[in-house]
Amino acid sequence: MDDQVVRSLLSVYRAGEAEASEGRFAEARKQSESDPVLARWWAKEQLLDEIIGEKLQSAPVPAGLRPRLLSQDRPVVTTYRDWGRKLTLIAAAIVILAVLFSSWRGPFQPAVTLAEYRDEMVSFVKVDPSLAVETSDFGRIASYLEKAGSPAGLSLPQGLRKMEPAGCRTLRFRGHDVSLVCFRRGGGKLIHLFVVDQAALPRLRKGESREFKQEGDWMTAMWMEGNQAYLVAIEGNRAALEKYLESS
Amino acid sequence: MAEEEFERLVEAFYMPLYRFGLSLSRNESDASDLTQQTFQTWATKGHQLRDRSKAKTWLFTTLYRAFLAQKRHRDRFVGMEEDEQFEEPSSLTPSVVDALDARAVQDALLALEERYRAPVTLFYMKQLSYREIAEILQIPIGTVMSRISRGKAALRERLTDAADTEERKVIPLKEDTGNG
Image (cartoon, rainbow over all chains, first blue to last red):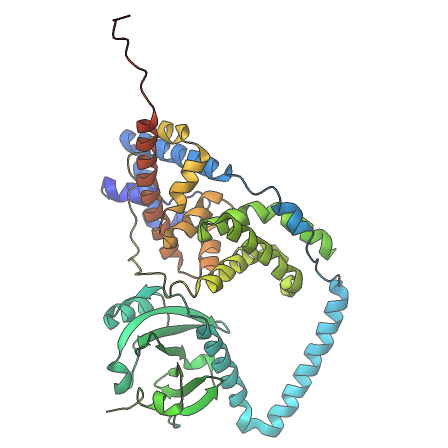
């Protein structure tokens, strides 16, 4: 490992961090211990960080802030025991209702899950989301998603493929990674594509036609492709959305 | 019980939360409001947090989300992401930084790009692990480390500039011309 790499790794080394025991950090540490020049440099770096940290921590906080915070409304006093009992009863009631409902309306059960997914995703993009990568290069987006361990290898409708990508990010839904890719559609508006593994929505059926749903000012379409569930959301109506979903 | 916990959290975290808010908003009044909003959210929703040991991360995450919600009208994106690469810090010396006042160091931090400001601030706070910082900023841990590395390098460049400016501000004493 050359000196420059060692120095750049040590610049983020923190003893006690789980990552500190990673091979490359351990190697950089070992090298700094055996090289006097690196050892001196490393000691100076730590001192510098110490001083910068102290200076930043000594920057003043407004004197009135603490009393302002302590005089604001306090949490409602509720004991955990009360909550525990209430939650247990509520949970029991939900389980019983869910069992009854699923045995009675089994075929319709997935719609509830899909609606939750759709609602949460649309809520997320109603406030412009910050993107981890802003680029018009779809290859870069695909590579980022793959590296992040989020659904990648996306199969896009032809209509969407023609649009200029704006960027992407990942988010989580019920413990599953979701890839969000945004495309520009003019007028400063975006097309939002969410892709999640089928496992997140186990009862979403393959081969069914796209399911369109209006969510306030937003129109959404959802479908399965391979082992991935696709959800597209735009501000507008069905006709506006359908043109991005054309297959040829 | 809830009231005691509230006061304990205010005492323990209002200063780091304010400083985090300041690093994001670069405005003292906004930072105070963000801090207050965070504790208001705790007062109404804090009881929903099952694992109380996560209160610290919850507070920082809540403040960060409040900031993102506020800035959504200003700019749409955080900018181009970089690969996960680390930077070698510049050759700034401890004595130069020690000679600077806290305000100058803070100003240098606030002059950084937003993507670096937040992780670098949390790094120097020393209260959160990389994993927790990643959770708060909703970015992968490798990205946290690369932003801290690059942010620190950028901060040191700005500190070097600040030190040069300070040096130029020192007015030399008038030389004795020997005519008197």
